[in-house]
Length: 359
Image 1 (cartoon, rainbow, N blue to C red):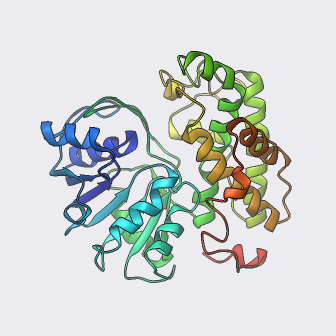
Image 2 (image 1 turned 30 degrees about the horizontal axis):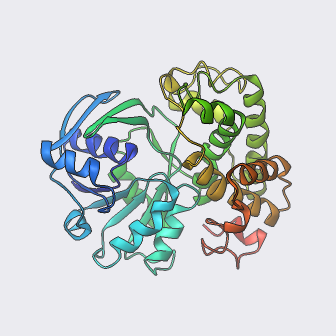
């Protein structure tokens, strides 16, 4: 199969290496303002990967031409933070052809909905199938240009949903060839809500803000940063997320339980499970507060969840408090920015009852 990976960050390089080592022909694209990894991969002809995935992965094309990257490929996988989804869709739009499939991985709160909307296609349009995963399939970090360390490739707990739903089996069969643990989600709200990044990252970041600023992130995010008090805040946020899912008729697994299924964790305890988790060992904290752990997971994730909760008459006082504190710390108003909202995802005209069955 011919595959195009959009995004040359940690997850993009891990995905490109994984698909290549699984025997597929892989192209790697990123915008020209991100040349470091593209240039390194192009120069050495591939990506060096170690950890849960080992070897040198040949890459057929690495460059800044989206037309070359997606020409005649069977599957396009957009791998990046939430703010990259719409730019990737706009770049793809002039060149994508009928029958090509797209996966936004991770969906980061409705990425597939936003991608399909940017392509100016109805959700039920079968010309182009756009799917999303509930989370990134890896814990990984680029160690130097053209080299990526995969600390963990998920063992389970990876959900996939597709637009339109009638195409789910087709795109699942493509994706599962590399990710055997993939499960078909009940609907898009399950992939949206099962992403635990908004539960984990803001709580750990805010309660370690002084440490991040004083050490420039010179500590381990999970091993050092998730002490019992931090875990209790995460548990409270998670409880509200689970309640939103229940109001939609969607079962959301508590994050520590899902962490065990995925292979990250060995304990379902919020207070100690993360700091002792083998899948989180060795992952350093971010070097500054101006980072996707707040900008994405608060601005895109928690803000959307609170808006969805309000629509469904589910109270979210802890999420609201985290958004408010993050806004003060970062001197911006995440709630007003509404990067991901019912409106931006094309869901604002649905009633609460209709949202439960829209997909």
